[in-house]
Length: 561
Image 1 (tube, rainbow, N blue to C red):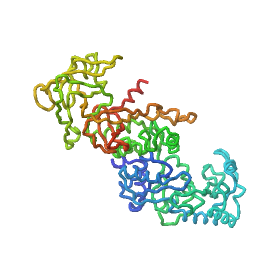
Image 2: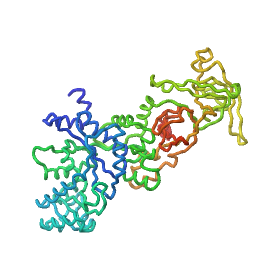
Image 3: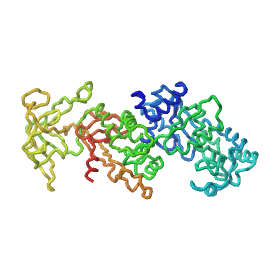
Image 4: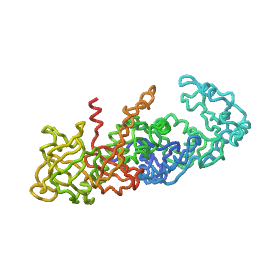
């Protein structure tokens, strides 16, 4: 086995084995098959990267197919959001398909099943069906309607289709084996009555196919070679193959279902049902809330497509479900933004700094490097004046020898500017510092090449000119859940672990170069972290979201606990 083969994941090894057995490369075809009943989350991102990544690796087409078989839960909004997310991640699909494209063909096959004695209309209640289905250790019992005459089954099924019968009165079931050890093979439901408006077919249909029936047959119609799904569908593979056996024509591409493990992310949930709960109950502000694990939420928070693709590549494809620490995702976005995000100065917890010996009314524009990781990023001008804002925790009135930021009687460098020395403070009646007074060395300007500018100073702090500062709303986000695995205990409501401090809205002061910052743009606020311009930004009000800090502070917190 070559070095390249050893590096393949097990899905790629399956494909390579099929090619070695005679499958033509030109016959490879993949699909990403989301259900349009919610927004995609980080778990879906791994599946997107897997399927479209295989398409790129083998130069094979990848369809985007919506499994839109349940109009009670599906909306056009979700279709649009899914397409937007896949495109944003950097992938292009060969064809946009829908299970609803095949409703007539699926129906025709269902009638064929009835005619061949492979399906029947069951008129039991859902409770009766559940009871007669048995248990994993006890065989099921046959429905009293299992041996209905073909003609009667066809008449009832057509009435179901035409909307002549009420919801819940009948279903169409496949006739397989009520004693099978696989519960899914015990006469599964193929169709149920739903008098619901479908976002694509309107009111044409009154019956809708179940996922297990529509999914494999859609793969077959599209000539999908490898149907990849998560591990919870492993038990469905037998049913997937049984359905295909009944319609397969020799010489056509027969899809092969294979399963990979779902990757859960710590401190969040990746269930569309639970994400919908968070939205509907107002725990978050929408599907694209930056605290959500949705791709839309991550995008709004400032995550980049490259960082999510790199995350998916890093965790890889596995056969066992496991919990991935969110710090790995944060590492991936730090690594990407470090290369591409412009550096700017912002102060989020301001205290006024007055340089007493700097001339009143004077200002100068200093050169500041945009990104030391990108030699082509160039420089920008930042204004400097007598009154500045600095971070409150960058000053300590009584500091020990290991404190290298601003304190009384010691020097510190202002980033891109001068060396200053703390002289005195002004406090309010409660003892809170309201002003820090300092003096500066006029010969110590950064980059001037003077002897004073080359002096070794241990501390450097950032700042913004008070008179030039832009006021902005800054939304500081934290993990949505306090527990690593909020979904781990089925006896405890996952919402009880919601972090009450997951959002803190503050007022920050930014350098004026950000005046025309556009929604979606990423920046590094020097020494503070990475931030993204939120879509709520307007000409009258700048709004920034904190993407991630410069280092993993949670690791320290959790190690102490």
